Length: 77
Image 1 (spheres, helix red, strand yellow):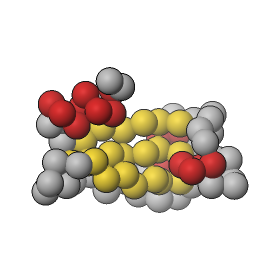
Image 2 (cartoon, one colour):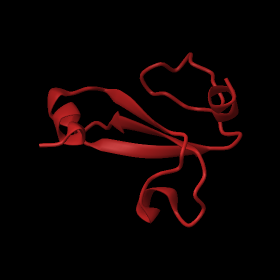
Image 3 (cartoon, helix red, strand yellow):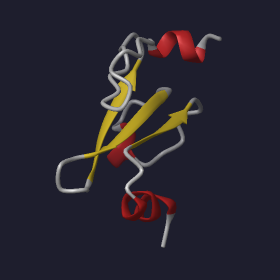
Image 4 (cartoon, helix red, strand yellow):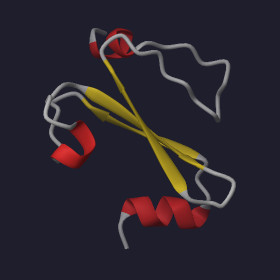
């Protein structure tokens, strides 16, 4: 069992993958290899949904709705 399956099974509501080096398959990053933050969050059925954030995107966190952070502020820190 991998981390994704374990986190989902244990009901971890949200987790992030910070991919600064843009190392991932084309199914995640597409043809443009650019730094990306992936936010995985559990939906109502207990299944993870994923949202990818790049460049000037602001992260939306279902778990921490008051959080306001942009991708560039993370990668340029």
